[in-house]
Each structure stands twice: as C-alpha cells, then as structure tokens.
Amino acid sequence: MGTFFKLIRWPNLLMIMLSMGLLMYLLIQPGLALLQGPGLSPLAFGLLVTAVLFTAMGGYVINDLKDLPADMINKPGKNVFEKRFSEKQGRIFYWIFTVAGVAAGTLLSFLYGNSSFSLIFILTAGLLWFYAARYQCQVLVGNFVVAFLSTLSFGLVWLYEVMALQVQHLAVDPVRLYLVNKLVLVYMGFAFLVSLLREVVKDVEDEKGDRETGCLTLPVAHGSEKARNTALAFGLAGLLGSLAVQWFFYRWHFMVLFLWFFLVDGLFAFVLLKLVKAKNTKQWHFVSLWVKVLMVTGILSMGLFYFE
Image (cartoon, rainbow, N blue to C red; front, side):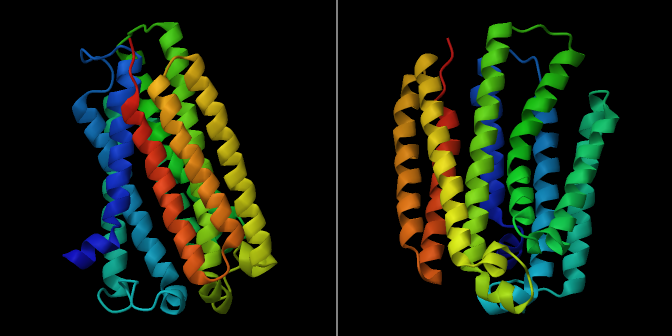
C-alpha cells in the first residue's frame, strides 16, 4: 500500500487539495461574500477536485514509466516500476486514473450546462502524456508545461465558480469581483514562477541520468551554469513579484498577509543565495527542497485572508 501511495505522489495530491480548498473557501467565496451557499456547491467542488486529482495521478504514473531509464541512474531504487510494479500494471493504473479524471470533469461540466469544458480535462491529460513522452526532454519546454499545469488547478476553481454564478444568474459586487480576480491571478503567477524555478533546479539535479539517456534538458544542452543563471532569473522575478504583491496587500489593507510575505521574500532570497553556491547534486537537492518550502509558504498564505 505504501508503494502505491508513493506511485501517486500523495504529498503532491494533498497539496493540490489544500490549495484548491483554501482558494475556494478562504479566498473566493468570502471575497465574493458567498458564504450563504451560492456559487459552486460542495458536491460540484468535490467533483472538480476529484477530476484534478485523478488526472494528476495519471500524469504521475505515465511520467514514472517514461522516466524509468533515467531514474535508474539518478535515483536507483526510487522509481516504483524498477522493482515493485510492472510496466503493464503502470499502464493499467494510468488509464484508470486518466479516464476517471476526465469522466469527473465531464460530469461537472455537464451539470453546469457547458459540456464542452470537458475538453479542458481531455487536453490536460493529453498534455501530461506528451510531457512525459516528449516535452520534458526539450529545453525549457517541459519546464513551462509543468509550470502551466501547476497553475491550472487555481484557474479551474475560479473558472467553475464563475460558471456556477452565471448559471444561477447571481450578480456580485463588481469591486469584490475585481479584487478576487486579481488575487486569483496573484496566486496563479506565484505557482507558475515557483514551479518553473523548481523544474530548472530539478533538471540540474538529474543532469547525469538525463545526459546518459539523451534527454536534452537545459543543463544537458547548454550546461549547468546556463541552467543556474536561468533559475536565478526565475527566482529574481519571483522575488520582485512577491514585493509587488506585498504592496498590493498593503494598499488593500490585508496587513497580516503584508507581514506574512516578508517570510516569502526571505525564502526567495535564501533560495537565490543557495542557487549561487550550489555545486554538487546534494546541494542542488537542498535547493529543490527549499523551493518546496517556498511553495507551501505561499499557498498557506491564502488561509490568512479576511474580508469585511
């Protein structure tokens, strides 16, 4: 059972559920003053979370299958398909998870009268497959794909909430709508930049296996120094974005969040410092872990909103 949970990346799934829940119930609905029940129902939100989680699980499985040769070099014994599951079992898992995710997304879209929105989940599943099969071994392409997919769960919560409000013909305060829209974009941007940073760091960490298997990631194609400079650029962009977000929070009188983001700023600065100094695989892995801490810290800040 432990191996199965490792296969589906249960910590990542918990983080997806946490981020979607915080966004929905502590930012969007309070921000739009929808605490009495209008908007996306708990059942519909559960379907959305299910669709995202199962689609992600399918992506993790196909990624492990495609990464097996490189993982045997970079992380011997860590890939579950090296000893514990067969490739045939992996493909069965992949199709079960992917079909379940697309089915849940299709049902949700149908319930709100926009069955064509099920294409979002079909295209997402396709993008995950192409990432595992091709994009992750193209310079920066795979990094941008993962970063985009990391923002998708935030965007889907907002998209389906707006869809539900339209179906219910419920008008909301335009000032509140403007504010919540800005806040959702802030967290989408944060998730995008931090994911992009982490993917480049992981590429350097896995450079040896990628090089031996012919996977042309940024450090393989252009060297680790070029990858380091690219990661520094993404990290610096994130730090500047964090400072801009702080100013936004200050102007809108979110003082607790304004103070919390000093911690986010500090983590960005710490990661940048460690990026400059990283020389070996162990140090790059250390940087990767701290980028995870940075991501979690930013996501948890959604629990600090207070709307009058």
